[in-house]
Length: 307
Image 1 (cartoon, helix red, strand yellow):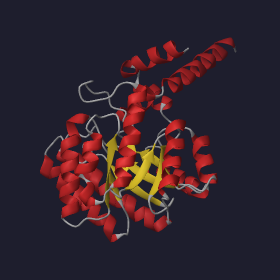
Image 2 (image 1 turned 90 degrees about the vertical axis):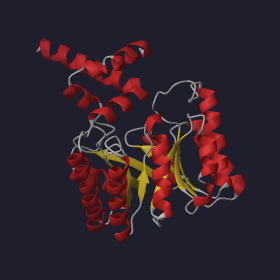
Image 3 (image 1 turned 120 degrees about the vertical axis):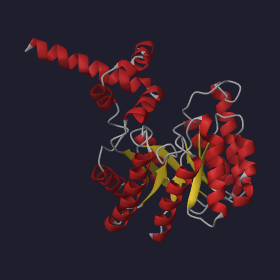
Image 4 (image 1 turned 90 degrees about the horizontal axis):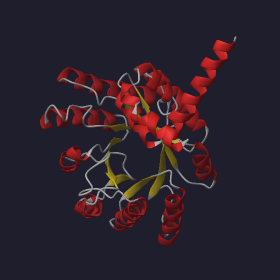
């Protein structure tokens, strides 16, 4: 079945978008802000906090990038109105990074200022390796301009990440540490599963050495266990020093266990019209989901034909 699942995923770019959308519904709250709010309210009721992300990697012009920025302003206003326990995450390509560095920085700064006015926080997401330098440069520039309500993401699969941790040390940053889903050249990325795990733990320890606040973003049982062990050894506070982070629709039972054990858990809640590229990445990361739903679809068709 694993080979079939992977074959289905390889064919996803050729699959009609409505089918991909059905495959990805567990990972995305919906197309509208109201959908995201409904999910965040449920998560808050389960003792979890959230990060709302407006999907927008497929923008093609400055007008669309500006619209994403204005949508984030609406998100902050709605979070306040509905008393949701959530911050936001932004992808710089959605704010126009591929259209121009300064355009993107201006859009991001407006979002960050709007968040600060409402006592909220912005996490700059990390994308493929072509954006890493600009992302870290922009994070540093805005922090040095006095924007404290701003964090960034580092990907443990990249060979550079431990060095990046030390480069950011003077900022005492808030960092989400994840493995990373983008496929890069072996020259800049660890491909071996064990090597990625080792890099994750080295990066985590380096972050705690620099007194960074860390969002430990993983669904890997081993890494969760090791993060808990290392945090306990260091005497870290579960609210002041770190939190765990997971994706919507992935390993929810593991998340429930973390919450029951007294850990702070944040769930990444994406929504929006620009859902396609995000959906492909999530399904490529977890081919079994595509296989399960494809099997259900075939059963449904056979059942319909049998009636």
